Amino acid sequence: MDRIDALRLLLDVSEAGSFSSVARQRAIATSTVALAVSQLEQEFDTRLITRSTRRLVFTHEGEALLGDARRIVSEWDAALSGLREDGPLAGPIRVTATNDFGRIRLRPLLDAFQARHPEIHISLLLSDNTLDLIEEHIDLAIRSGPLPDSSLRARLLIRGPRVVCASPGYWERSGLPAHPRDLAGHNCIILARPGAPLSTWSFRDSDKLLSVKVQGDRQASDGDVLREWAAQGHGVIHKNIWDIRQELAAGTLATALDDYVAWQVDLYAVHPGSPPSRRLGALVDFLAEELREPQ
Image 1: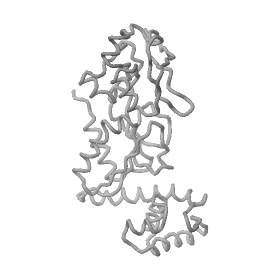
Image 2: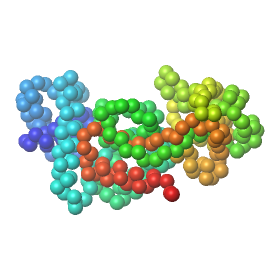
Image 3: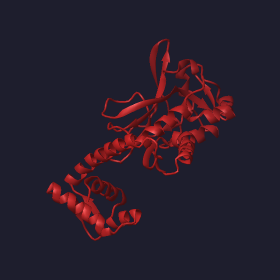
Image 4: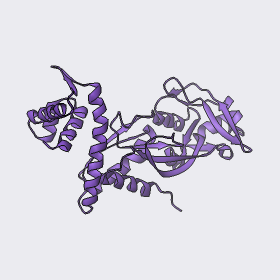
């Protein structure tokens, strides 16, 4: 069997968790999948997968090979795509984004992209935690910056402020804060991160950075929940403006302290450092065009 095909099957096994699942997905014999893995083990002279009656477990060497296999297959696909510029886009793309942005802005765009390219298969992973692209087998992450230095590649999609907002009804009951320090008297809804809830909000006051500790009676690990609570009048949130554009337009949320915005937040399309496949490059181009702010 061709080495690239064998590596593809190995990657499929890591995703599906069994030889039989891969065989069903690809409409091939289970023995073909087992043969591909066996050939790789012979070629590398090491066991890649420990098999039992219930599950498959990748060995240390197997996990190491998976990372190389993804890079090799991606680069091979990119090379082939360069020779097939006129062919239809096809194949899988795994994407991750935050809960709010993923549900409100990204999902409809992915639907539109698939409508244009029906042979593309999208997997969308929503999480407000930063996922490891390599370990989670992710092709593209939509992340806000600044980004840490890494081997990842990034393309700027949009830029906007992180704003303080609440429902008009809440502001009417509790009063608009005139200064960030006034948030001490407000019920602030906090995004909960493992071991470190985001209860310190940053502002800029006369060219000086100001950090304000906030508190309230609600916190959640899902940004979408924070947005809904705020729109229902339960308190104040600190959100990227692209997450709440619909609510601002509809009047269910209103901003405050706009003169104290700390900085503009950049939103990037991030992918592993190897050259992207043609389908991934097309998706990034599509997102950049659709998210571009009107001039």
